[in-house]
Length: 87
Image (tube, rainbow, N blue to C red):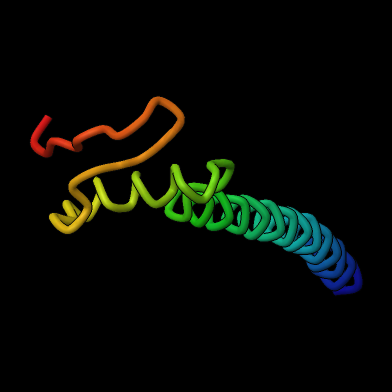
């Protein structure tokens, strides 16, 4: 009887140990997922806001994106340039 109880206790201890390892692994995966998810959101935000471009370039890119028909000309360092849509 004592032997059976001892075997069950050993099995319980092994299962607890395995459960602790799996819980730790799950926690590590959750941290990694959250980190990558945050980075993805930041990069998507930068992409949507045209991060890294000057204000004037952003305006042209956004106008092209929206096909803003009100912006017919762009005045820049090379002079006045007609903007054509559909290319």
